[in-house]
Image (cartoon, rainbow, N blue to C red):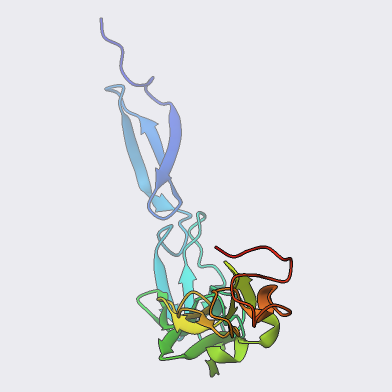
Length: 206
C-alpha cells in the first residue's frame, strides 16, 4: 500500500515568489495543497538590478533593494596606482552614469607617441591626464660599462599600455677610445688610452 505525501489536515509552508511564504494543507488525498496566496514577499527578485537615477542597486538575498552605488561619485581606479607611474603601463576606469542596473565606464589607457607618454591617473571620482617625455629619466649617473665599452642608458616609450622603458631604444656608446683598441677610457683605460692594446691594469688587450 502506497503512502501519500502527508496526513490529511497537516499544515506546512514553503518559500514562494520574492522571499515570500506559501501556506499548505494536506488534502484528503494525502497531497499538499496551497491555501491562500503567497504572502510576506519582499520588493524585488534576489539578484535583480535597477537604476534609480544614477544609483545602481542590487536586490539582496532577502529580496530588498540595497543602498546601491552612486555611479557619478564612484571612485575611479588606476591599475598602475599613480598618475606618475611612468615606468608601469596602466588603465584608468572612470565611472559615469547608471544604465541597465550597472554603472557605465570609460577606460583610458596609457599610450606612447614617440618618446612621449600620455599617462592617466585616477583622481577621486574622475581622472587626470598628463604627458611625460621618457627621456627625462636619462641621467649621466646611469651611464655604464659593458664589455669594456662605455654606454649612455637611453629611455623610450613602448608597450600597450604604454610606459617608459630603458629597453625601448638601444643604449648609445659614448666612450672615448683614442687608441682604437675597443677598451674605453671610462672603463679602465684612462691612463693607457693612447697606447693601443693595453689597459690601466696593464692587461694586454687581444
